[in-house]
Image: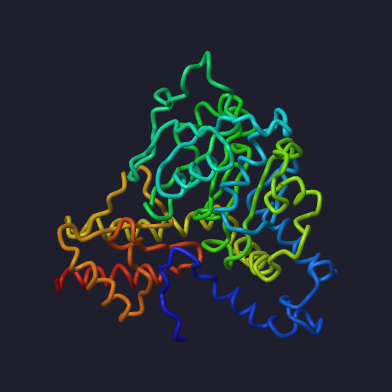
Length: 383
């Protein structure tokens, strides 16, 4: 009662069933006489919490035993640096003067930030192709690998599976799928995917990737924990001097407990994983998400140009739907204000692109999208 439809890009909505369970446990977790926020991360109760969270996530994504699951901190942004630190110098971790090459597909703001951070670590960042913020490069044969005779072997290929700001999403690996080898590799380089804004929104073949990482605060819990899924053979050779908290090998050896982890965030993620399993797993979750975004995209299409989504229909995100009122920026401000008054909050588009954006992650109920669509139709009729 009193809760509004929150279309925030993150932190985002959490399932009400999960929030009720958190509320129930908050003062006295399972009769232990203390909250999860107060218990030792070395104690039996939290050990059970983190082990169950990992196992439920493995069940959801069918993660093979050949992959490690890590619960880290610093958000996906910290992984922009962790990825090159852990993968860039595998040939010789002590050769810190070496500048490894890594390939990038840039499809929006976050993939471009990954490029910038890798350069700070000392990587020679090569952009294979860019997607103009509205599309995904589809012609694999046109990728710019440079001179095959002189270029160094790429240490990894990085992509952002869903651009939160631009609303551009890879559907699986797209055209990359035709050239990806066993173990998630392209021309011998492991594929690394930032899945922060579509993590656990649909089934994923983990073995298509060498590394998957995701901030939790959009689909699977509150801010504070970052999940890293990494093929075990990629561990063990971080660059000499890698900061401890970015070192996947250290985190693996310490079962994500090198220091105090974000205990409460991990606990909530564990509850979300159980809830997703109770819904029928990620196949069912994907069906729900397709129905929600389909309703919204249909509304935009049926507006006959009053609303517009600038993204190529082939790669429109199921999670983040940007839209504008073409030629009427003044009306966009009115739209956001009137929507908030109607209980539809956080619809303002990102400051870098403007317009509106509806983030409809897992926990957004169909009723919330239906209410937004009804509001959009009424707004068009009035204005």
